[in-house]
Image (cartoon, rainbow, N blue to C red; front, top):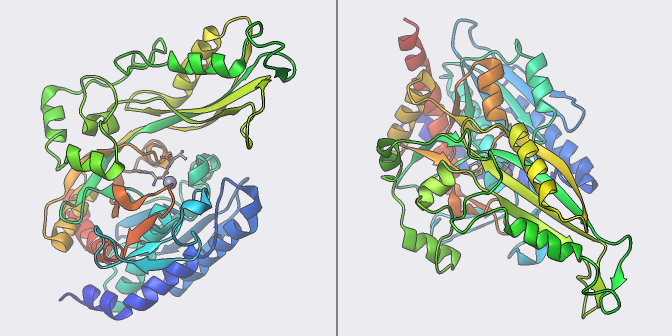
Length: 466
Ligand code: BES
Ligand code: ZN
């Protein structure tokens, strides 16, 4: 047994308790009523970093929620690992679907997590995942085998688009100078099939508003003679995809990278059971762009989804009304070479052109983020492969994931750094859904793998620079 393993085993209960304390803070960045709690989470992260061995930690204010920065420099000549994570979480709604309250963490076993999983909002996304890095640092410093310098940048606005991070990164290039960025905010295929994420999709998110008459009308007096904005909105949305589930916005696919047969075959070799996937979701069939597999639809193809749609009367019973307004929140996941600003523009032009003169349309852009692809021949990637193989006893499979982490491409662009997406969650952990959870084993093995990453990164870095 390695000493890091021993250290984790003997401190397991405390490592779990500390994470659960963090999970008790409802740091929901999207909802202003949680403002105090979001700040409280930042303070907790700072104090835990200080207790875990950094030289110093600070709260860096932004126009939104602060960024917690910390560092430990052991030797200016040693390579530096920059850790990124986020302490904010998604709203926990709908609360009634949680089996235990979202901000009162409990450990329960499941079929997939026979050793237990921590149930709480943010357990896998991303508190449980970035906290592993703080505990890996503690283990390495306590054992005296920290081999690289380490910097932490833990933000509080990832779930709302990281809008203030751009400026922070651009104006703190020297402070953030590093040799690799390590991020645990993604998932693995399974404990028996460890993987490293090598691609994330980008995102363009917009809200649309369709206005018909200047006030709500009696649906008998006016119905049939005046355009109903909800009916119109539904037609407009329905026309955004054709019968092959391809997106019908002109120019949408112009820059989409088409992968060759070899790459697609390689991608489809990853372990995946379509039947099991359907069964877990209780769906009779999967759905998506014709001509692509589920792995491809999620990993290398763009999408358009309505995230929410509302208008008219949605209260108890029935009210006969022809509403004045209808709304929808629409997101598009993007793949390499698609630019989120360009796509948002294309969407806006097209959506407005779809509207008949009977209604007025407003398109309001929300946040966005660029897609990212991670090279698999860097010192960081080799270190991740070696660490995973040593900890899990299996070679990591490179995967393309469908989610987005807007900062990933910013690190590549602004800091010229390779981000390594070494996450330990599972797709079934219900992130953004009720009953989010994170496996206890994933947490502990993650800490060990991160410590191993440091060891291998030092070697790989020296090899690459000798
Ligand atoms: N951890 C996720 C990103 C993720 C999800 C990566 C699934 C891989 C697989 C992250 O916290 C997240 O949810 N990001 C948002 C980004 C958005 C708010 C800009 C997302 O993907 O919806
Ligand atoms: Zn998330």
